[in-house]
Amino acid sequence: MASDDSPALDPLSPAFAWDPYPAYARLRARPEPVYDPLTDTFLVARFADVAAIARDPTMVRAPEAVMSPEEVAERRRRENWHDMPFHARFVQFSLLDSDGPVHDRLRRLVLGWFTPSLMGLQRPAIEAVVDTLVDGFAGGGEIEFIEDVAARVPGRVIGRVLGVPDADGPRLRRWSEDIVQFFDVDRSDARKALAEATTREFHDYLVAALDERRARPRGDVLSRLAAAEAAGRASRDEAISTAMLILMAGHGSTIDVLGTALHALLRFPDEMRRLREDPALAPSAVQEMLRFESPLPFFHRYATRETEVGGRVFPRGTRFGLLYGAANRDPQAFPEPDRFDVGRAPNRHLAFGGGPHLCLGLHLARLELDVVFTTLLRRFREIAPTGPEPVYKTGLSVRGLRALPVALRPA
Image (cartoon, rainbow, N blue to C red; front, side, top):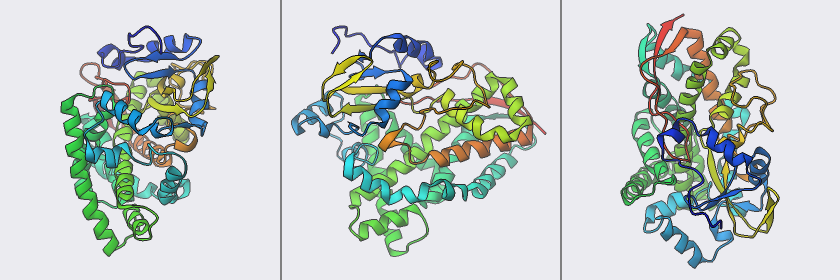
């Protein structure tokens, strides 16, 4: 560890929330990863280094691969992840935080539902959801984009894929946000209690849903998980944890990237005009939305062997903090990285991570962004910001807006 105990970043400050990219640039300029006591990681900011670690199967998520049970327990106490029985069973253990054969087995249970071809079949349903939503303000006027649009699409979409009613969307979103908030650097006892209580509620909901699917299977992911449990290919805890992860991942990050994507279009009106005039640019525009403001800018990995990063050799057990948000603005990988370009090509960003933990829902997220912005730009000839500058969420693990008021003029 470095002798300097000062944090390398200040993720809880409003200044960092508004614009983290100067801080990321300073980290990229350093010759090697920088130790950050706030996250207890060596922060990795350069695209090449982040990509190499993310894609390396010897870099793992779970500490059990490099620590004894006693060391794992001590780390959890130190980071206030202890004394959370439901959170430990269903959040701290998951498809996201497992490795090797366990991770591969759990991923295979649901991977078939998230292929490009099957996700493509969801387009008409997503278009119907978005069109119905937009019909509610088709005459124009002012809306608050995060609550009126961004928060109302992903829940319905991932809920239908998983197999939960539209009416349950608001509480599933609240549960997801209450659990995810504890992943960030502020892990106070109050936030801990909220995450644990919410995980228990979420667990009870999914137990009932899986029991119902086991008795009456349907063509959805919950039915597939219930069948896997019945066949002995997954435990009840694994089925619940996987369903919980899919719902959480399908809510928060998609809501966040919808908001930051519109904010980027507002900040670069020529690019909004370009996309409106040429809807065929939608696929590349979506990629740029994800690169420009990566919704999940920070993930960790543990080195299971001695490894060299940035010219320095690190021992087995080193915990790296992968700054996807910094990597996706690296000028060594993206010309003019701070310019939003809806036609950028190539655009091999890392917003979805890489390697064994490549985001399961990447095709669905891209499709939702495509449909939402294609619909909005077709149905409204002007989308303009109103009120003061929007406020970004503080923290290191998510990148999103708290609110984004806009005025709409129909086409």
